[in-house]
Length: 133
Length: 133
DNA sequence: TTTGGTGCAAAGGCTTTGCAGAAAG
DNA sequence: CTTTCTGCAAAGCCTTTGCACCAAA
Image (cartoon, rainbow over all chains, first blue to last red; front, side, top):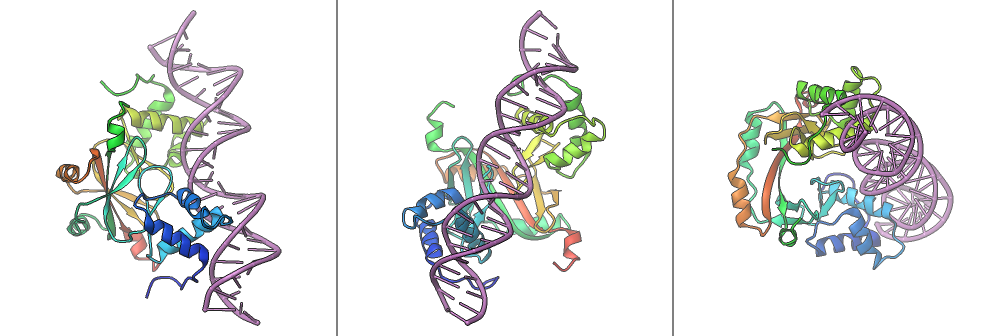
């Protein structure tokens, strides 16, 4: 019983989800557009945006609101943390166990109803560390 | 010894910084434009963007890359955490002590050089909790 | 057949930028 | 006087949307 109405299974959605789940690179909408275009040359960027949005609403994928200008997407919908390179924008998963107690701690210190949290690290990826800049 | 070159003290910068430090609301660039315009009616939005960017580079203020489409700014440049309302976008400070050890933990699990981290909670603000929606 | 999805192209929202004149140092 | 900043307006980038046609169920 997913939130929102059911989505039809279209070729565009199947390929889009396939491609997203196949990579670990947290691609942007445009990255995915380029990837999917190899298989469906006539797909439009609008379709990519619409479907990423819908699949994220359904909880099939995750829309990451990480620093930087473009949104990124993750085929892994479970809570996990990320590291982002301040120089090149690369985003990796972080193998750090999600700490759900912080939400309780936070809840005690605010009048907001806490629904989720996000922990994001940033720094320099291996490539950018060896590139004096 | 701040990073970057020295900035001249212009009326625009003085008023902008004043206004930002006066509030606790984490305003967007446009919010600040509206606020500053009360005192400097001829200031331009471009100037607001340029100066927020420069002051953030200098470490005088903080540019928040919080979820949502617009960037927000914080007159408090020290590390601290935030809660954001998923319904209305309101952003509050959270009185939760910053945990710097997580950066060390993260560093052990990645080949990135970790420089900073950000913890952001989201949920419903008091107002939006009492508004069935 | 009905309902929702798609491609296309245009519009939208936020931010950045080029330039000529103004102001700080 | 020199260098940096400003206002203005245009451009840029990413994302969303209206519409007529198409496809899934």
